[in-house]
Length: 259
Length: 259
DNA sequence: CGATACATTGAACCGGCTCAACCTGCGTGG
DNA sequence: CCACGCAGGTTGAGCCGGTTCAATGTATCG
Image 1 (tube, each protein chain N blue to C red):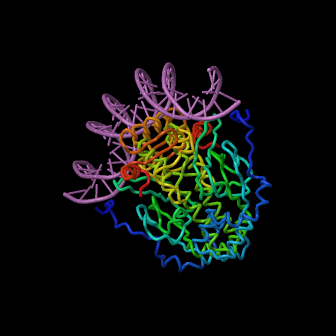
Image 2 (image 1 turned 180 degrees about the horizontal axis):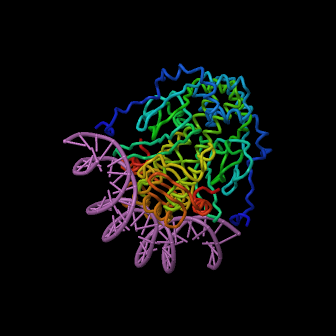
Image 3 (image 1 turned 30 degrees about the vertical axis):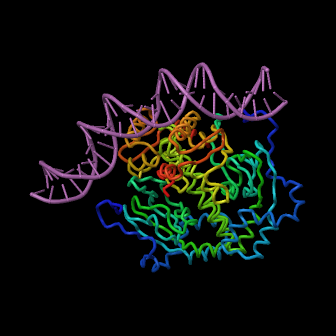
């Protein structure tokens, strides 16, 4: 049987094709891309101006994608990686029983698609949770460019190397509380790294998604968050979070994050 | 308090320094390395002879290491990756409570150290479970070489990309049976890929290590294995395994492995 | 305002962990 | 060569965290 899709607007994959609107805005491309995580990281790793120019010629700005639109789907031929420029992208797999498994949430500044390289096809789905802007990099072309630019190659190596460790974080047998704390602290730090407030932020994903990611029941997520609030660790209203007692939350998360 | 070490021969890290015996056998290096997974993979990806020569100049043969010797330790400066040529290497971390967390078991043909690139230090320990032979590749040098050899760069990308997905396999939401089945099927396939028997093999790791890796109690591992035997899935005596009903074991593992 | 999806809360259940005891194979030394 | 010691492995009993199931609450949107 073919995989059933959730009802709603027909979900298309927007990734493989290039948005025409995007290619038109080359006037803004450079200024835009200065805010693009990929370029920034490359810059900070000592890449020179002309190299950066090469990168900018390569990049395609994709978006905006709206909540529920797919960036790519499991099984799509792998053509490109992408840096999230705005919004949140969720990656997930669906097993043959139709059960979803959330692999990760990707915030501005983070790169998706790296786990597709070895199989030539995307091993997972990527879907926008809110309004998402992307920088798309053709992988063959960025790999070729990396031949000439040691810093770019190094940056790609580092990105992938980093992702190897991340996946195993929540697979550990830590308590529900610890994993939730680690999840929130992780979000907080990643947001802070991109200039957002580390204490107040929005959960762009549903409780169900969080539960799935942390491998818990949604009910557990609810209960843990409520207890956190009662214990004065945070305020949470709907999807708006304010971390009140950061040190104590970090202490809880320590068991998972090891840092 | 400093981390306590198991008693026995003083455990040294053998990785950072170069075994003198190794550098001497350059006569054998080429023939040796033909059996080295890394070279083979590169060959199969279309790398030409002269490129392979460059790789051979780069490689250092390390070993034999004996059970209990460390290849590298958490926190060691990252200098090199290594392909396992013979034996089994276990990677693990130790949290501040002294609890060990097994990250993986690495069989001949597999590469360790890739998760160290982004941090400049090894994020985990690597220890020989039996007699281990390694091919060591200085990372700066292999990265430089990858600038000239697109196939090598591509191979490195693929290796890392592959490792991104592996870690999240043994999550909590699969049953103990399924995880054990997946573990055994995984071993079987990886061994088969290197020419060993997929039906009969040795568990080079202790029950405790398996339990730790699968995030279960050692008692659970015992019970599951015994039940597998009673159900006619396999024979197991000590650490010798013979898979009897491969299809049924694979069916069990399917929930975890998705293939 | 009703419909719908998401979120919360309560009660019961269960898989796997903990704790404790026992067994087994193997190396060691008398 | 056997007795002993010990690490690793097995087995049993009880318990607990988190899931499951079911019901109720709440935001959002046509």
